[in-house]
Image 1: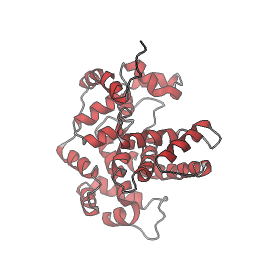
Image 2: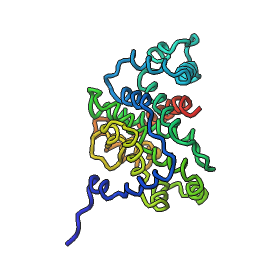
Image 3: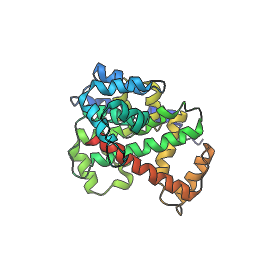
Image 4: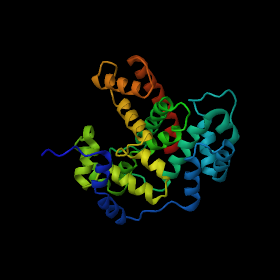
Length: 287
């Protein structure tokens, strides 16, 4: 009798997260402080008002300075200097960008900075924000009410956190894989090297940090939640090549299933536009 293909839930159950938990125990892994956890929970909620987001930014002088600096950056080309956090958040950046920068800064500060050659922290955040921006775009078409937007965005931002952690905690192993130019199947090679999938490590870290369950599910490639599917489709779109590629043509069909109908040229153009936006936002995280 042929065995059925494992479902995403089966893969999650059989994924050796126990090994990921053992891996984390070997290092001085810092849980999120209570104030950071409060911030993450507030920013994970679509209903958090702009006044609360501004208040959160005001609490930390480093975050406040970063937000104001980003608002005055070349990407936004404001006519007059932005000097107040409120103006930076409400008038220039918007809640989604502010959410991404603040959460990225919190996550970066709670993990060691990767020191292995060939792993670019800047590029990691560009790719993560790009995935998040595209995931939110997919989610906005899948559910025009906007109820999925924040979950999809955060899921996209957090999905590769396990890769970042592996580069931070085991730089020599990750550096050797980069030196072998194993980037085409990088996460698969990491799985072979460590005995667990980076996604399993992401799940362990987010659970220990107390990240809300709906966001953890959105960040997991094994989850069947709609937000998680939006993130997976965004990742496919991000890596699909130009309009002549079969992968992009398949992405076009999949996007249409989620209510996003566009020509191949439009999809490539939109992806590039979101990449420019991601570069600007990531500069606020990884500075």
